[in-house]
Amino acid sequence: MQESAKSQPLRWFKWWLALGWLLVAAVIYLSLTPHPIEIDIAQGDKLGHILAYMTLMAWFAQLYRRGLHGWWGLGFVALGVALEYAQGWTGYRTFDFYDMLADGTGVAAGWLLGGTPLARMLSGIERHIKV
Image 1 (cartoon, rainbow, N blue to C red):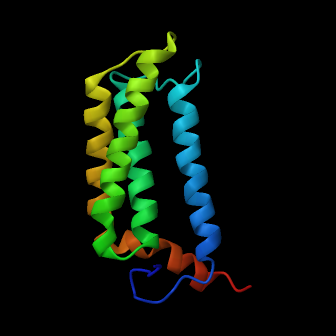
Image 2 (image 1 turned 135 degrees about the vertical axis):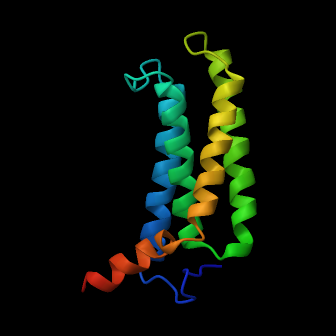
């Protein structure tokens, strides 16, 4: 069931949802590609994990009512764990418990952002674009 932060349905819900699933697909691809994006700072890969999972959680928190956020959060944590194991099986990526911790940190940050004005970003975009 869709519900924006202001309890008004998003007009473009299906498009926002499709874009959200494209973000999930991008995270999966970037997690399993033999040539991952490198962030050239200390622990840059951990920062990438945090930002990726924070983005996923914050995005889906805008699309679904607050009561479902926990389920989305658990799903994204499970995705991070599964992808970490998959990386270990590839032969060209490595398994790292700290990456899982970074994923969970990102999910928690995104969940917290879901309770801020950022949770109304998509509805704000819809208000400002007249189509």
